[in-house]
Length: 591
Picture 1 (tube, one colour):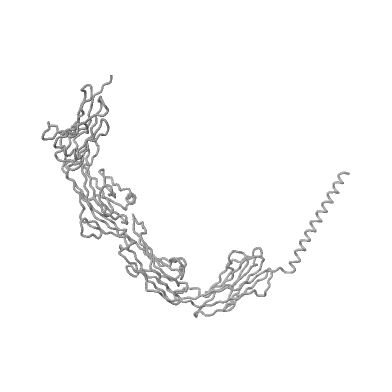
Picture 2 (picture 1 turned 45 degrees about the horizontal axis):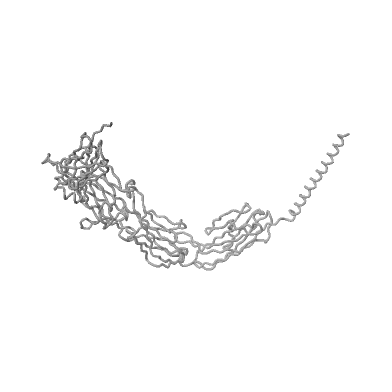
């Protein structure tokens, strides 16, 4: 026969809770006989009448409650909730000062013998609400309107700083947990709508809500305690999604005798309504002075103005400005001409290296592009491109917005240079081992004074009787400055290029070989030098084809068959002589 004794268990006391908050006191019974579902009755013994039991609520009798608890039980403010057959919890939604006292959980006997304990007692002490939460003066940084709660406007990329005062005068040893939360604009505030940004837990650990965890780890989100009761949150690099109503929530925690922590009070204060002014909504770019028509060699100046309610460049924001050019009729914004990066360092786009082009900041938000000597190739449609960046943690930049100006047409007059070239092979026929001389005469019509000519020679190699699909190969040439440039000769022999007249060029291929066979042409070009000493090509042309075929001399054509015939005869004679000698030696051995 088993041995058991009924035992009723309640939490160890005393328990400290705060007026106006909720409390839950558990109770369970073990070692009992009878049905699995036991009944429970709750009583209160007030300090002023420690011997008087006041019935609170019962799982068996709905009329059990005394008059002082009846209305609260009917309203559901006080109730007993069954967790399982032998365990319940007493719940009081809003504690009152007169709720302090000794709480007794009693279980009516279902045992055959009266053995063990049939009730358990725990003391509940109700503390006055001493928790205070408010926005910390002075208000958060930014442009603040005189409203309550304040409305704060911050630029994208700037810091958002909010302060909160949280203190308690509770005589018991408690810990405060303070968190900053955000709700979407105009949304009702509650646990379902309030998104935690960051908070300090009761154990002083700093944790962020899920959407902000990465920013906390990167150092863009910070929370610190200043003094005894001031908490300050800083959100670096404000984003559009940071707009909303910010709240500070303080929770007071106490450690129960069993070692567990219980929240005994919580209060929330509205800090500010925050609007984030995005850079994309403010950034605007205008250009001037309007459509331009200039001549070649003249300077070209274009101005770009960046406007809008933008934060100044510095700690939180940075800007880059550049000019793009597209030839007339070409789609898209075109290619980069020049730009100033976020550090103010200028650079030129591809194809503009070596030219006298300046990109500079001439006013707070005005930038100037200057080409010292415009060329006909500079004609087209120009646009100014501005980009705004915001700084994250450290020096990391994130592009937040970009804007292009309207197109600005620029026209540059053509020089009107017309070139023609005639090339031929001197002598008409060349033989292997000789020097082939190719001449090119150039005629020029139009153009400014001081026009310089250059000429280059190119070759296309035949393959299987047809010209190769490989682009023509440079053999050599003379530039507009008179400097010779040598390419690669197909035969690999020496090459010479020279100016034999004011408008006549010559190419000579020495020690001509069969590899030099090909179709050659002359490509002259006209060049103009501007005051900034830069050159630009004002015209070009291409001569007709000149075929170079190295012939063999007549003696060479006879020598080859002679050598071949002699070689064949010698091989045949040696074969016959060897055969006869072999047969003679065999017969001699037989004898």
